[in-house]
Image 1: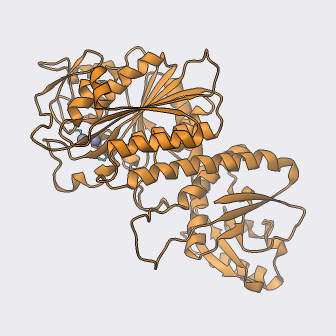
Image 2 (image 1 turned 60 degrees about the horizontal axis):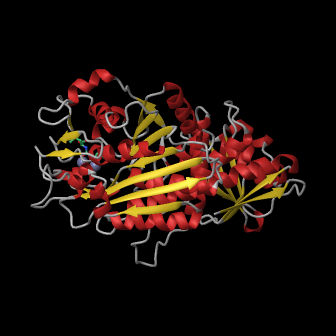
Image 3 (image 1 turned 90 degrees about the horizontal axis):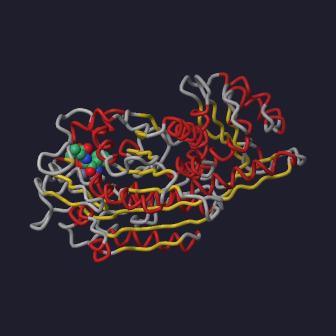
Length: 490
Ligand code: BES
Ligand code: ZN
Ligand code: ZN
């Protein structure tokens, strides 16, 4: 999708238009309204007079074969509504096969008073997220998805430069989120640790970061007993993906991102039952988010240093799978007592978090579809965030709110450490009770990064897109936009 700024002095917009109203009463003041004929004006006015309580979203035909994408909000209007409206415009355009149209940026303004370039960035993210479909495996020619190819923004020249920059930044962030979604949607049989690693290499070449892939031999040399243990049951060997982007000064310590890369989670010998195994090809979402948020940061030419680490493995069932009761020695020297082979994410992350310390990071952020408990706590509308520094956590939440990738805090307290003490090993990978599973998982990870500035994002709640958010079925691509928006200024 392209975005183009057109000079506002050419008052009359040609071609198809979109009119997005925060409330019906704004119709007559809309800049596109003035250019319409008397008949067309009364057509639109008539529509808003009898518009339904749940809002209006439809097309209206104008003279000369032109079309208006007409959206009228009902109820409150705020930043979240505005972001949703951006997706709705694209959704309507795609359904009506309108590939190019003019849009008025000011339609999306709210009382929050977000600067127009930041608003532009956040909106462009939504445009591209809504302009995505995972159709790679569909062979039928009928019903091929239609995409919006261009949005034109008529803008006065004096403000257009900053806004255009914001829009282009947003497109980059949106595109990389979609690249992440593509990986996540790829079936487990095809998305193996090696394939995930190959994407990191390819992406690094495309955007300019350095990637090294460590295979089983090298992982053994590093004594990453956690990653090796989880990977043991699969013929697909583990990979440890290391990505480095040095955009800042030599002296500056990097932010290290760590992503859970379980390419399929059967649960292992504690095999998942019923439909709990559905969607577990997306258990590498954290890894894909790390690869593609790094890609976004590189493409944004961020003048900072970043490292991405992805421990990738398949959690499979076989006669040589790791077992409940096994005790794994991690790279840190700490031993993990495996009480449940389905709590595998924290085990592979333990090794990766320890590895992160060699960079003396100024901040470590891990991203993982870690627990069903986080989903039970928050539903599917926000990722859980745990942080050693409340201020940073707050900044992250603000960035997420702006870009439309939401997080909500849960406690990171040492009190919970009691619940993950091992009987025969140092730490158990399962809490002693059935309660607070997202928190005990976070506290488990903390044991491997204690003393460092650290944020843990449990993105399990946001792994899959839900009805009503105007995203294609499948992966929601969580954390890519969040991390890109937060880290480009951190
Ligand atoms: N990958 C799952 C968590 C998950 C569940 C992500 C649903 C997305 C949607 C993780 O490896 C897992 O199985 N966690 C267990 C932990 C339990 C055994 C302590 C869980 O949450 O049930
Ligand atoms: Zn699991
Ligand atoms: Zn898992």
